[in-house]
Image (cartoon, rainbow, N blue to C red; front, side):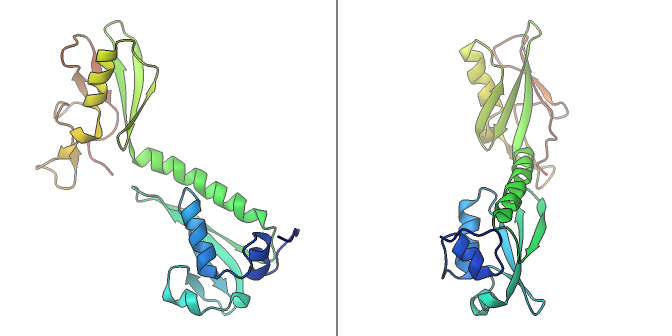
Length: 203
């Protein structure tokens, strides 16, 4: 791998990454596969075309005609599309990493926001605990000492308790929570309550 300050072409970029000879598609596919946010790539061409890496057209482009790269991401489980960032040759090859890191951090925020359900738990003594359910992965902020209470709470907020709401197509409800209230008493444990502070409809 050749150490350089700036790369002036796609081939020089590939050389700086130890991937000299790889096609634009294979490089972009590696970015998608090995970066958490699954970024997409568009190649900016000398003739003003923008070629998406998964299009049929990408197989016919000449790497010598690539004058820049555009990177972005669509967040899984969310309607959010991260604003794309374009970069044109010449540039420091590490700038690609900085762009990907920024996209990744923003995508993580939206993924967590749109794929998590949030709750707080109140004990009879007035203590509160935070609970988050992300696709069935339950995490706590603080935790009660009573293991039986923990088990009941985790069952209540579990992903498998979401069901289709027949009155509102496309929405989900938790059967263990009152229809018009986000707070429910913990079965078998007087004084304990669980409160959801997200809308009952997934957006």
